[in-house]
Image 1 (cartoon, rainbow, N blue to C red):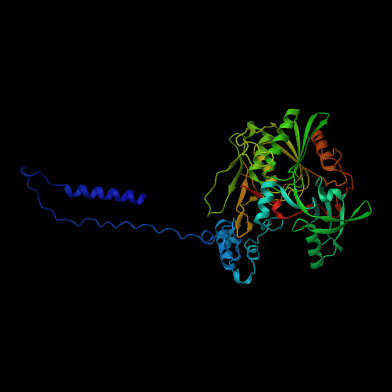
Image 2: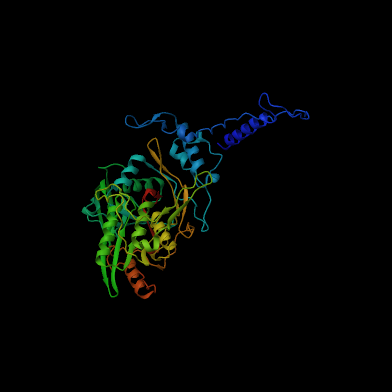
Length: 504
């Protein structure tokens, strides 16, 4: 457009020059000294800029080797087209696109997912961990059901695993959903898995690991597997049948009476659409009870929607600390147009659920200057954004438990041909510009997960330590033996990475 404006100015100037020295008819003319005419300047005709070529990820979208059929936008394509869509999309949007291997041969891969798994950086963090540990896929239908409705297929168990590959595999029950197949079978927090379908959990052969994994992560409702476990030296066995379960993201919200006032305890497990209404109800109940302090249990909360995390952080800190302040600012690669920061969200966005809060409804808040968060390696992504954002507006955040997972990154899920791909597209920083926690946040007090007590029990190790620390400012000395598999090191929730994401 600027080129056309300059051109118009040149044309106007040329027109004025051609009229100089002339006069009207019948008027005496003043002789003038002839001048040698000069050639007018050559004006180059405007050239319409060529439009940039449309990227392949736009032209090949929904070109599928196996279209899904009626009701879907898929058209007949090839596996090569699916792979080219992937390469083009992530060459454009992946945060570390320069670090994607350049020598990948699409012909060497039999599926688009196999190819996708190589489209990532191989760099490591300061501690030696892979910089990108969050590169995964999910069937689109399953992802949509999980994210929008909180529905999950399984037995109602959250397994905790040890992280040290040099030690025997340990799988322990961290949570049991009330009313689930596992709960009805009598399984409890702290039960230690012995075998699945007759295969020992300590057998590290590929076939045995695959058998155990298949039993613990069933693919369809109605699928049954035999699990054996140990509790206090007693071995038990049951056949469990998987079904679709509605998992509440807010597991518990209760008020604890302490010597120096009322403390809210909030057990929060996932930042999904269903969480909005449940969190609003929980915070409102704390406000009505006159709560002046909060213990936020996110030890197994792997993340989810950053907008939900922003609402929660606002409801903790209130408007005085957050008005006009950034919850999280996204930092993209240099090919991506910068996007506005996510501000602290003071009104409900109106996510649809069984307890929808009308969009625009003012959120309740506690106006807290201090919050205690129970953490573990399962505290990830959007949960870490809550911690980082509150620290960015000078709310004191004490962490009781273990290091968090270390994911200052987020992505926008990209779906194509029935698969939803998750690849890092941005790094988030708080109002102070800090977002460098790829190796996790260090706990204020290091406390093991106490599997001998239920979460929310004031005697449970992490909660007891949190209540003690808020009163004394001193980390308590913990008992040597908690039923947490401490000999094998910290335990991490064993689940698909879809639980360890943060999306806008």
